[in-house]
Length: 481
Image 1 (cartoon, one colour):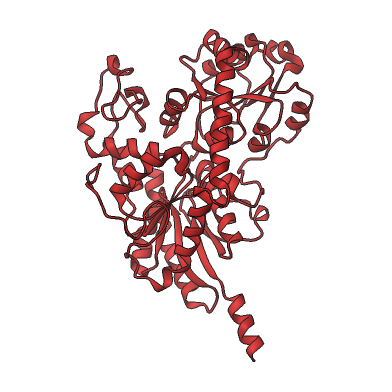
Image 2 (cartoon, helix red, strand yellow):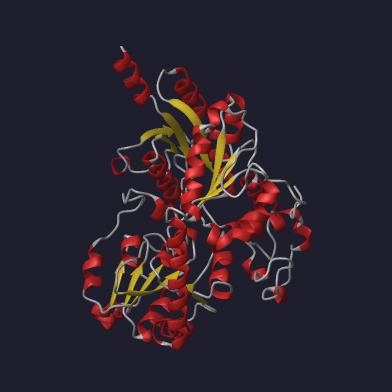
């Protein structure tokens, strides 16, 4: 009887339900977080939308639950505000019904829900069911700080004139008006977009925030943002390095044959080019990029995602002579195993959109960057990479001569070597934070303890964890709540 009882105690684990935002840049860090939590003894349930559902076979350790998102038949190649609001509304009932069933079952104890800030409907559900929730921020503290600052006083920043594009944003050095972290239309940000971003930045009744960043990289901004929210912060990044699982999280099929091509290239000679999983460009930029790469005379591996060139299926807009002219020096693929590519000895530079996952992956593999930001957090990340961290070069125009010059500067010049030295130093600081006595490792231990004790704590009580500790005394809020 005693053995049976002990066995039941061992088998009854705490479960955590993860609710990812259904886009690659958000789904990846959530699945990596799931892998981390599973390795710490939690059962992990992933409640996901039908749109962009993850591949179950890559994560046999998780339980998956599909929620009816009501988006069937809609064009989701670029997320619209209307679609994202509908997604949040449509998923409320499916998630609530599933959680009620979970709580009624005599299975693992439900410890908490962790949701991406883009799935803000979760707050309504957990408030009704009295379940503790934690928000995952899949981007930098720098980005959120800039967003909060502008949301607090939008009239101070919007609208702006064309002549102000290169002027500094007040209180947000080194950002300029062209780096505003919102979709800009006619030099302003429409009110529906501001409202959506307010909803995304609100944590509702959540008891903590998990960050895919590091104290060593963003400590001062994490502290400033925390003064706004006044809940425990757990910066446990970089998640892709902290996660024990190396399973693919990609929604697109990866072309592994490019690794064989990289094997034939000289060390640090190849420029890897990828603008991520969501960005679209026009055919003019595709052609200018192609000639810029060709004229640079540097080897390159170029990801052109199907559907990423407006009005074309893939690379039909390229001149017929292009591939013939570059021969073996260049390789174009539809999608690549990015972490494997960046860690390859042949890769010496990354021409990137500066999404946060790509940024962290590049730094962790000591690869300096050419920054070509387009939307969301990318302009903020790019500006910090080029002006503060100095591990990237800003691409000043998408013209072939500028691209050629920037590629050659990164790959061949003394300035490029300096960028490489600095990115090596950044990587070493990140690695130190992942060691047993490092900040990310300690914050992960605190997070595990925090989640484990949630069932015995009133949902809104402050707690030890991350940067915020039990002896924390709120100072004057930098960004007024």
